[in-house]
Image 1 (cartoon, rainbow, N blue to C red):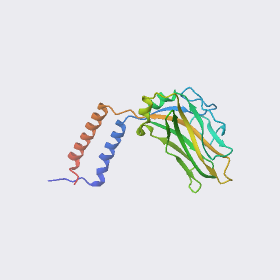
Image 2 (cartoon, rainbow, N blue to C red):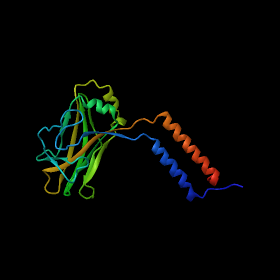
Image 3 (cartoon, rainbow, N blue to C red):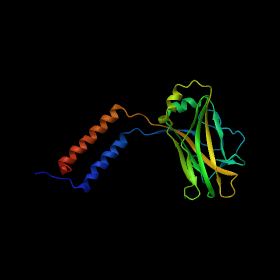
Image 4 (cartoon, rainbow, N blue to C red):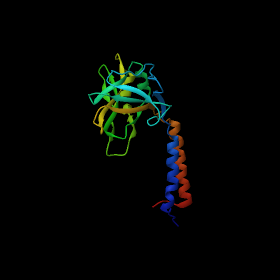
Amino acid sequence: MRFHLDRRHAAIPVTIALTILLACCPARAATLYAGFDGDFSTASGTDCTSDGNTTQAFVTGSGVTQGTQALAITQPKSPPQLVDMKVITLNNVPLVAANDRILMDVTVPQDVGSRAVWISFRGDTLFANSPELGFDGTLPERSGTVVWDYASEGYKALAANYTGTFWTIAIGIRGNDFNGGLPITTIVDNIRFESVPEPTATNHLICGLIVFGLCNLREKRYGRIS
């Protein structure tokens, strides 16, 4: 006699298996780069500085995603698009090389018309931007996170063999508000790196054995799915 597993029960071992697979994957390790808790310090040992095109203020409340303060960047004059807040140092190179992604939390005001925010890498022959995080006055979102998987674009490997004289990490902003355009203010916080450790052979072996055992247990109890 052949037994068939009721498909309503099939999800149970599958869900368990997926949970185990996720548990076997190494967790992302985060390194805080800039928290803006009352100062412009960064993990590179060099402070974030302005070219003078913006004004800055440390704020509390809305926009704070780690620590007790965040950085409000105000563009008081044209141009409405600029890359101003920068960290220029070769000490950025080992941080980029040791990680896979860079992230930054962003909050914009309720009267935002439009806003695009991104992170830039600059070097002697390096000119690269993260995907832009966009806000639109017609949509409800007023906060989000810039996420740049720069390793997949080859910049982690570039940093590992970098021979240039500087590596800049900078914040880019473009946009306007419904209140007449400029000035506009954007709040940023919790710039951080993330690394994704490669699963070891042991991770793969353990996960495979557990999933194989679950599949056998399912067949013994319920029969094959057909």
